[in-house]
Length: 160
Image 1 (spheres, helix red, strand yellow):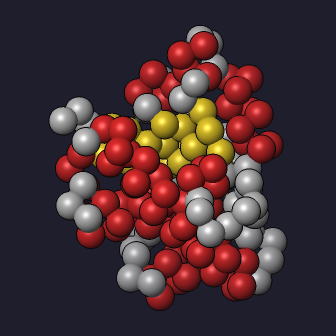
Image 2 (cartoon, rainbow, N blue to C red):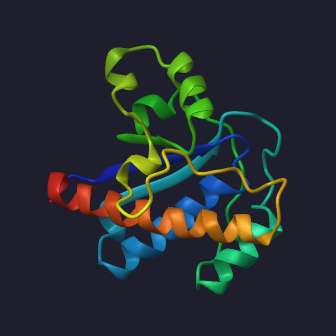
């Protein structure tokens, strides 16, 4: 079976995309697919390069048994558009930025909104919890868990 690669993208790579990365990696491990899927996260902006995920994101994820502490923020690089099969934006704004960065039609076809894989949430975007309270981080986790399940089902059907 081919190895598939997934890149989660938000603005600064300290809240939503590292949460998605951590939850998806945990789900892959739980389902025995960890060796089959390469997972990473990045931001469209360089605000937090080298920083660990937001402490509130780490705390919320830890309450669900997911450790984000070893992740470090990075910015999307041009090579990501060739190195990842799925580049999943957390919202339309970041998707638009990614669409402006791509060089080929093939690269553009790799771009999607992450919530397009969700089955229990109708929202198209994962809201940025950075300026809100703890409930925002819990909502991000709830939405991410749903979309991650849908993404894994998609990968299992398409790449098994």
